Amino acid sequence: MSLFDSLFLPQGLALHMSMERHVKDYTLWVLCVDDETHEILTKLSLPNLRLLKLSQLETEELKRVKPTRTKGEYCWTLTPFAPRFVFDADPAVTRVTYLDADLWFRKHPAPIFREFEASGKHVLITDHAYAPENDATSTSGQYCVQFMTFTRDGGETVRKWWEERCLEWCYARFEDGKFGDQKYLDDWPERFPDAVHVLNNKELTLAPWNATRFPYGNGIVWHFQSLRIEKYSGRTFAVFLGPYTLPRVTLNFVYVDYVAELRKAVEMLLQNGFAIRPQQRRTLLSKLRIQARFAYGQIRKLFPVTRIPL
Picture 1: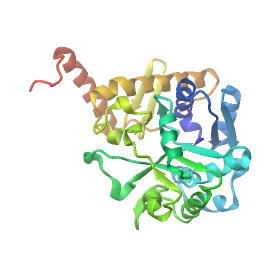
Picture 2: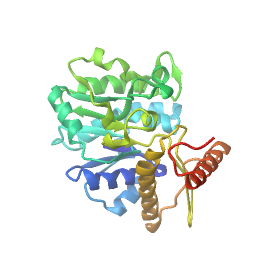
Picture 3: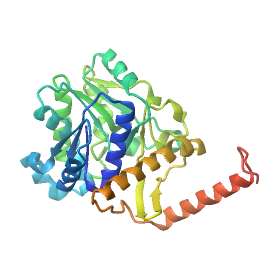
Picture 4: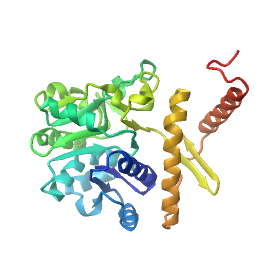
């Protein structure tokens, strides 16, 4: 299951496309953070998709904290509620895996679930597994809220504890050992040793912060954190890839395909009367990065070697 608003519909659709291609036997529940998302996804009538309308599910506790949070912080606050909403909607569901909307499958996730099931635990979390130069463990947390599994029965104690903490405090800043919904996970293996399993094979869930540490080819799912659509008009499709330095091979064989899928999602939305909004404005930094990548590409055409001559 995933959650997103209308601004991040392109990422949500790209996630769905990747699941159709690689997962096939699944149900993707979407918690529609705004009614516009529910309207357009209902109109698209995509296979293996079930929708939940936040406006019909918001608890009094959520309504109370909503005015104190930004839109992003409120989405983080919603994350521990999301599995609960699915369990409540369908009594037949025994296990829910939360997926960030900007995840994208490159292979079937069976190896991840085999490891989880062999552990005998009830909650699955994944390590950031930062490359040394990107290590933000102290401020952003050791574990990432990106791919998390909860069972209906054994995982409820953990999920409920997390829900209560996020209601108390969930902000986009580091404060007193907390950051958003994420640093609460840091002590789960010790706090809930009989319930929580940390994925051992760190190469299965990859992201820009560990792109220089692991080969891209081993990844089952890729997390495109910080990637944002900046402009779409006619023949212009501009995206900001984020602040991380990425290997050229990863750009060529992961990011190029994902951006193409995002563009396909955008075109699908436009064909159905949905207006695309920039997910962030083009800044001087992003323009300089685009210019730098263009210059690098021109140099590689002139000098097709692994190292650029000095």
